[in-house]
Image (cartoon, helix red, strand yellow):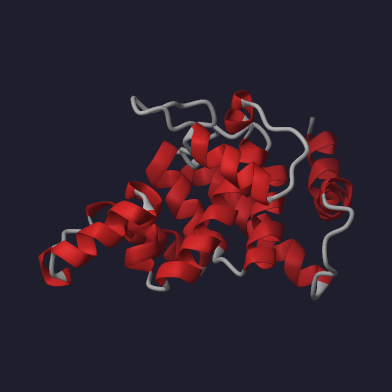
Length: 198
């Protein structure tokens, strides 16, 4: 048993690179390989800790988050904070409104994102696939970030919808808004950043 654990630990850097090359063969070249591996393993550790073992393949999920955040210029710790807030890392959870998966994506939103990502096939059960769900969520958040810029705004748009947020901002002074969801995400984000720096 101990020998098996030692082998797994020693093989982790190879597994990270193998996973990235297998699932993202056409991805842009990454930066320093060793730094990337350290960051991916750090994300994996946080997923295991915060997710309390709910994620079946934390290394694969960490790799996907790292790769897609790099591609779309998103903070991977913010993505973990959104996942923690939305689903507590439960990949198959569904809300009463129909949002599904780790990042709680609605079916119409998922269809639109899949079309923009040029996926050849998308079905409803894809929302329960951790890898596909997170890739959609990162892409969607990156678009909202470009549109609203400030974290408090694009996180609120992610939760309530961009059109609804725009109507609210036109009708209500910013000082009177609560931003409850966004503040919850940002609290989780601050805690994750703190844990990552310990």
